[in-house]
Image (cartoon, rainbow, N blue to C red; front, side, top):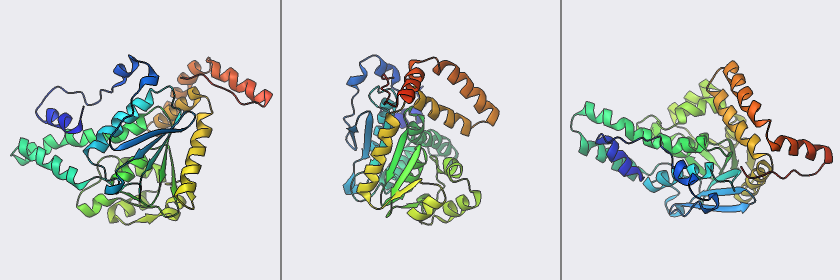
Length: 310
């Protein structure tokens, strides 16, 4: 379902479930037949069980227009159930990772809301589902069952911070810089930065400084505050390092990797005891699978384990 159609139906009061994922339709056909033929995302398989998703609007500095949001959710929903994918690298084509949300989309959405309602209070109420649709597009990366590595070069602005904050691991090149740009547009970031960024860097004071001022912070600072875990000299070494990491993750048990991601996300949002109870339940099932035995045998024989598709 395309983004604007989705929003319009929601505003008109249609019974649309914005949380519905295309999983059931995907499960009804062969996983190898999953289609990644998008217009503004380029999806490739550079390594075994590794998928690279590239923002592909280089002429627009990968500004995230309506099509990007649409395709991002569709892509990561599909990757979540793709048996031939065990790790994902998210990158940007052209001169930068992304310039953030396309301002023309903001204008389009504002016009859509204004056209539907004349009363300011009712326009405000109508705007909530609009924002929620965009939030779900970004959250699809976090909800994807496969580990996602953000490989960022040059600018990562506004919506790019929202997107990268949902990724499991963040790498960048030396020339990378980051900015919570919404502040300079007179609005508060509303699709994930305010919720995820503080948890990522673990510094409330610095979070407020960066978000309230909208100042740029560069790769060295991003590394020092824990927003990225590695900085590479240039874009090529960044992509090589990101793909190497994805390959290493893809070589592990897919059961273990997906369980780890699920448990980490759950534990982040719950108490320690709730997290312990959650992983105990998951592992009581997962440890009975064949991957545990294969991994143990590989460790003893010093050979590489080969795991079945999940």
